[in-house]
Length: 184
Image (tube, rainbow, N blue to C red; front, side):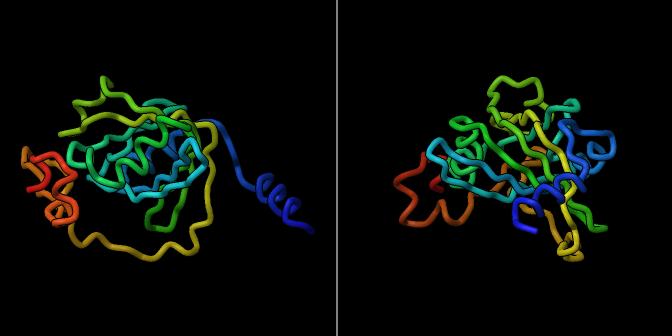
């Protein structure tokens, strides 16, 4: 059996659908991290880890995911790599993974919303990224390590506290390229 036949058989064996069901919604909304891959207008891929507090991603409806871009990310390379590329190509793919081992993929088209009604739901969100989901399907979880949260990142905005400036923004090589508030 060739690669194309294997791929077709896998596609037949997995439940692929164009919507998020109630079980997917419950799984996604309890997570505090996910992986986001995008492709820019020139076809260059980027993949980033996105972390926050539980509820980082909201399932708006059966076709829409939404998550925040935090203010402190505005000059960060991960922001440019994964939040501006959807603005040019729109293509994105997300992987949601957790213990007990479960992994779910959601593919779709991303867009940036600076006046989104959800802005107030996440403290210090600069804008909201919405993903119009076109495919949702399980992904084999067998290689997911047994993980345990040791400590939440101090950089996630919460409780009215200003997150610290990342060390790389204080480095000599970066300071002159950043706004004064971030070169700290």
